[in-house]
Structure formats: structure tokens, C-alpha cells
Length: 237
Image (cartoon, rainbow, N blue to C red; front, side, top):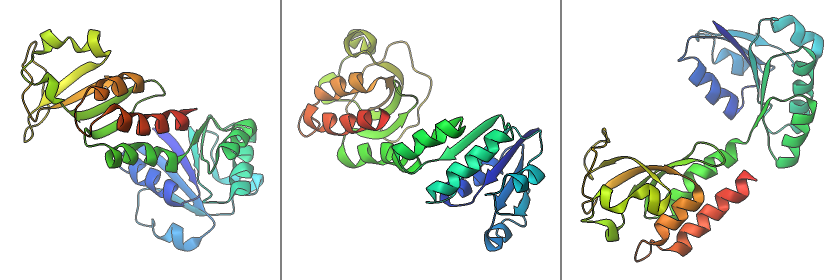
């Protein structure tokens, strides 16, 4: 069984813990605030009240078999850097740390972080397109290059078949599935005709998505698509 330790239970740490408790993972939670630890006294996790800013303290509570450590020291940049450095000295295999800024993230990588997480940035990636676009119903960035989106089929495609449109060739997008307004996504039939109100599930790049939405009429124009897609590109750099 995988063994994961969470150092610090601020918002991000708590969110990760809630997810891990649903999985078959051995979890150790460490925080210097007893009230925070007591919140999880009935959870299936080993809980320790400890100041993690001491490498010997960490050595005592983190078994050599620890597979990964998640570090969330709230808004204390110095504390997260020190905790990351100590975990690196203890040769923890995977060290995942929440960062506040790009500069903070760079320092964390220098002192040993395996992966740096920017929760606020990730939240912005999910929320911003939903606020700015009437086309996109959902936007999920899979990697720096690939996104999966749920969007309304533009009116200029209504009445055309998937074979006729050739989504891959014309727009460099993959159509994963399609559904009506009150339906659920299912396996995609080989050749279907787009109907008014249909919602498609697509995969592709930001640039391909911008190009595709740019053909849509009314307020679903290229300008709006460019606004939020450029925002995502800046975040990914």
C-alpha cells in the first residue's frame, strides 16, 4: 500500500487529504496546530502534532518507506522552503509542494521539490472560461498542450454530418462524444448529423479551440475566445 504524508493542513492540504481518504492509501498527517489535527481524529489516517521545521522531528515521524509528501504551509513561503529542503535531505521519493508565486516555485524546485502546485492558478484555469464564454460549458487542461472541452456546437455546423465536417482535418480537434441538451455523453456513432443545441466533447490544443470558436457567430466570436485562451497560455509559461 502506498504511504503518503501531508505536512501542513491549510486549504490545499485538506483538499488533498479528503481525496486520499477515499483511496487505498496509508496517510500520515502532520501539523503543529492540535485543533487542526483533532478535526481528523476519526479519519483513517495517522495524525501527529509536530513542528515540521526541524529535520530531526521529521525523521522521527516519516518512515523510510514514505512514497510521497505533500507540503502545504499556508502562505508561509519560508516554512514551505525549509520543509521541502528537509524532506529532500530525508530522500523522500516524491515531494509535492504548494507554491504562492512563480519565484516561490522556482526556489522550491531548487531545494528538492519534485512537483510544484499552484492551486489558485489551476482554479483560474477552470473558472475563467466559464465566466467569459457562452460557448464553453467546461474546460479541463490535461497538459500544457492538450485540453478537453465541453462546448455547444456552433450554428454553422448544424445539419452537417461528422463525416462531412471532418473535425480532425478542418479544425485539428478530436470529437470524443456528443449529446443533446438533456442527454448524457455516450459512445460516438461513426457518422452523425449535428443538431441545434447539441453539445460536443472535444480534445485538442488551445490554438485549435480558439480557431474553432472563432468561426462561431454573435458574441461567440474570435475576440472573446482569444481573451481567455491567451490568459491560459500566459499561466502555462
